[in-house]
Length: 398
Ligand SMILES: Cc1ncc(COP(=O)(O)O)c(C=O)c1O
Image (cartoon, rainbow, N blue to C red):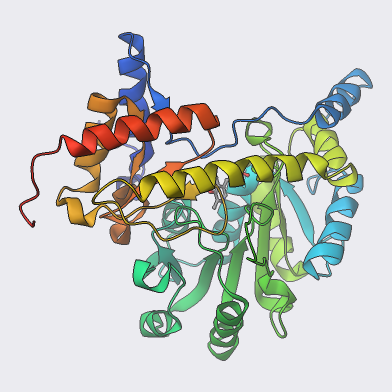
């Protein structure tokens, strides 16, 4: 009987911290409560019609079989053209792009194909949790590098250098960033590139929020910087830009030596991404980008409102995010930990948010609010939150 246990590597892999909030929210809803959801990291819009039409057409035309393990060539060509035109990255669509089951799979492929047991991977923390656990599934060691509110959540290269050891093999960069909304400056990206080159590191650049940026923020792809193409694994997807989270489509673009390794993991796991969904993604990249502009404009309207409203809640301090659809206010002045506050907001105010601690050790003291909900719901959620915070017992620190 002792033999029949899950693999010991699973001991280090917990259920997602977001799950606890979602579960409790669901229970409260079942009991009749109206919960306002600011915890879910996905656009609330429908997928644009021309993308749905292309997938439906593909189904009607019998595109129901396995595709090439790499994905349909038409989509890989569209991705390569987009990467060249917008990101200044040159890759061969025949061998250097793999269409994956979400960006999520692209990250997992990179870790399973490139990380040896004991290899260290530098991950700015707080972070999208999957990085930590994909590294661990591969037997690697995630090394947490702090992102600090004092630096507007821009990574401090000195922190990165301090974390380097002879075992460091890869650095992860996610700009625009989940959960802080920070967009790394061109200067910082250049500094990170210098560190990667000097220490011969691979860089995994997760650019899934590249289109969701505001003001004068600028998205730069690390692979386009001098000396970086040969060491950068660029991952991206359709989930956020085109509101296609349920379609499960992403991709990885990297030099051939790396995709040669990654494609073998993909072959023996997902095999290929869903055939007809890939035709939808093709329409997304080939079609008008007006739908993206409209969505980002609406996110910007909500972001402005939320930032102004949070500034009026005593004890909340917010660094203005320049990308993605999250704000990550500090709640440190309230003298309550993030998990306790998130549960209180849920039970008392019916507002679901994610405690910062769910994103890593440096996330404690913050909440993540996703403004991927309607403007009206966001207005109501902030009113309810403000009331619940006013009713908190006085902080021991004040
Ligand atoms: C930074 C980041 N990368 C990747 C993903 C996953 O995207 P996909 O739906 O393409 O798997 C998410 C989703 O929240 C994310 O926040």
